Image (tube, rainbow, N blue to C red; front, side, top):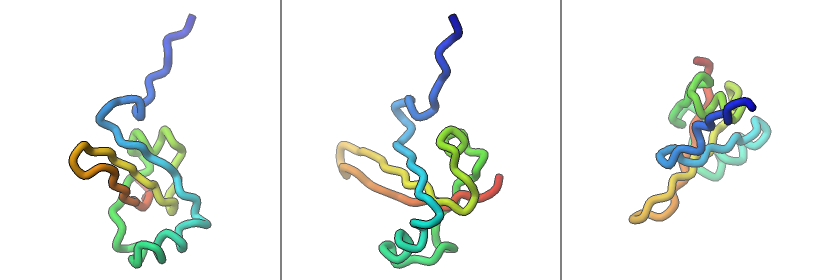
Length: 81
């Protein structure tokens, strides 16, 4: 019997990460009223980015839950790294 594979996203301190396809990037940028250069970055070598298969040029939607602020959503641009 092989050991169970560890998932970074299963850890309580890691927020939910989702890939946003390249085709959806212009729509998200318009909704946020920002340019692509204004987004924070996440490297494609980041453990969660690797786990979800994020490719350079895609956006990653990160949803954090907090007892005080509730839910907050941030987007990061995937870059080579």
